[in-house]
Image (cartoon, rainbow, N blue to C red):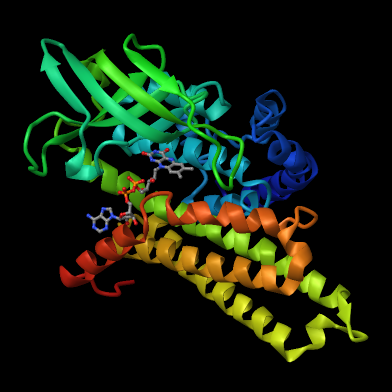
Length: 381
Ligand SMILES: Cc1cc2nc3c(=O)[nH]c(=O)nc-3n(C[C@H](O)[C@H](O)[C@H](O)COP(=O)(O)OP(=O)(O)OC[C@H]3O[C@@H](n4cnc5c(N)ncnc54)[C@H](O)[C@@H]3O)c2cc1C
């Protein structure tokens, strides 16, 4: 989107985030369920389903630099809402890069308007990811027959399509994993809800079971055996989105802490005048400043057409550490009352914990960044 149009859109969108979505927090946290009847029409009105869908398919076509600003703002309010927006846009965007024209024409316009949604089905209860997957897809004439289980699959309560990563070949060769689109109502495909999460409450991250699920070969995403590369590409920019989520949550915790430190008085003085609290404030500022600029650099590189595996993993890793420190210090600034639901700090602290897990845990981020450096990556502009 042209930058001047984006500035206008952003102003209106941010007003709606705070005026229309933020007030849903109490209801979501009390019921541990997203009120879809209210939420979906609001998100549609804001064009939040089309943020990363290209304009030729009816979306807003935001650049990554623009989108991360929007996602950071969503990450300041109740986290379950952010998760819905993030996964929907991330997967819509992945489909726009990996899908063929027929798939894109069929699915993306619905994604842009929020009547269709694509979920990402990689994680398994019985196996690891990548080459360790246990879900298999066997070719039978013009079909694949899929068997296996996936769990923790976000938006499984409303997604219309699932990008399922399955093994199409025995053994652990790089070309043994394939991405296949499976529609929600395909016979043999069942979805069960999992228990409620610690933070980012309200959405569903279901258990998917595939029992002799037959899908046509035309549902292949890209080429057979390219799943590992597609995975890496889809997760790469998505890791930057999680870093932006860390930034937004950290910024909100910081703002609340500044406000509280000015108002709360002990021994006749605002606690913000105490050196101990000032140190917490300064440390939060350092983390936010560093994270904001790391993300900006990586987003600009992606928007210029560069691949950013090392940068994305480093942003994701630094982001989760930064938001961990910032929400921790925010809790210390707030004292005991911050541990109660009277202040949003309690929720921000819990919501932030998801950032350790989404798009891979720390071990994976270290592995990707180290692999890039060891195989010759340099700090190129
Ligand atoms: C709320 C929520 C939403 C999610 N949404 C999705 C989704 O939409 N789609 C999806 O596919 N997944 C989703 N996930 C799953 C998430 O991506 C994974 O939980 C995460 O990547 C970790 O994988 P795992 O749970 O299989 O952990 P495991 O792989 O079992 O890891 C457990 C621990 O062992 C370590 N470990 C594992 N293997 C190795 C190794 N080889 N070497 C060193 N250390 C290792 C890990 O770092 C971790 O500390 C979601 C998770 C949550 C909590």
